[in-house]
Amino acid sequence: MSQEVRGIIARAKGQPVTMETVIVPDPGPGEAVVVIKACGVCHTDLHYREGGINDEFPFLLGHEAAGVIESVGPDVTDVAPGDYVVLNWRAVCGSCRACKRGEQQYCFATHNATQKMTLVDGTELSPALGIGAFCDKTLVAAGQCTKVDSAAPPEAAGLLGCGVMAGLGAVLNTAQVRRGQSVAVFGCGGVGNASIAGARLAGASTIVAVDIDDQKLAWARELGATHTCNSATTDPVEYIQSVTDGFGADVCIEAVGNPAVYRQAFEARDLAGTVVLVGVPTPEMTIELPFIELFGRGGALKSSWYGDCLPERDFPMLIDLYLQGRLDLDRFVSETIELGDVEAAFDKMHHSEVLRSVVVL
Ligand SMILES: [Zn+2]
Ligand SMILES: [Zn+2]
Image (tube, rainbow, N blue to C red):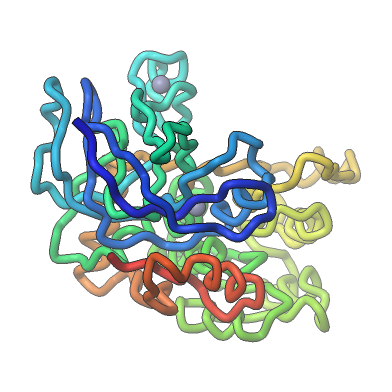
């Protein structure tokens, strides 16, 4: 048995997305079918459409989602029909070399559904990040479903599934920011602004937002930035030093994925400080750094994948903080849209009119 639902498909590189009928199989062993309630529009969806991730077209886009489990495969016991869940792309395997040494956040063999969703003609779909949630229902591995408190509305909760978790986790998990530290965040889109919210949550006392867009800096202020720097007109390294007694920030978060910005983050960091790269570079980019500075400044240069999150540990906790009013996930939802509006949302993202557009079903 299977069922037909609506889904947003990227058929070919650079072509506008289309709404098409998607065939969703019944869940097999280890799988679940989830009724999607909300799904955020992420830059990664656009990268898939532009062929920037891989060329396994057609893609079923969408991956920052919350929903309700409709059915599960025969052996699934951790989740059950009716459970309210946030979807994740880190269903850890428990048996790879990272998992075996107790570092499941680095799992090298995460689970996705085994069966394929297809178009009506049988063409197999590649779901974005193994999820594919711009659709009425999707098929995922049961481990990709993380139960959270259903008091949190899906348009806010679903954002933890990707970009907001990446930004929060870069600060909370990767940099492990402590009370009283100074944090500078380069790039204030959805991910960078989540890092700013994370820095506030962690108790950072100086939080500097850096961007070339005043609208994004205004959002950063609302989410907890104590200082803002428009790097189109002000040197961010000098500015950050000026607000940290001349020393630089304890932690610099690079949320752009750009060599020139990374260099600024490297230079704006205090001795023994930490740089975390959470922005995603493109394959042709290279960086050059003064080798003696790399040694002499000490500290750590880290990368953060998905905020080094463990969904089972982090999603329910962050939803609880949201429900207590300590983490303003609602602030990231700039607009709610319909399934057919994804292409228009990509345009708005380009013109930084929104932090997140969220499809509500
Ligand atoms: Zn593993
Ligand atoms: Zn994403």
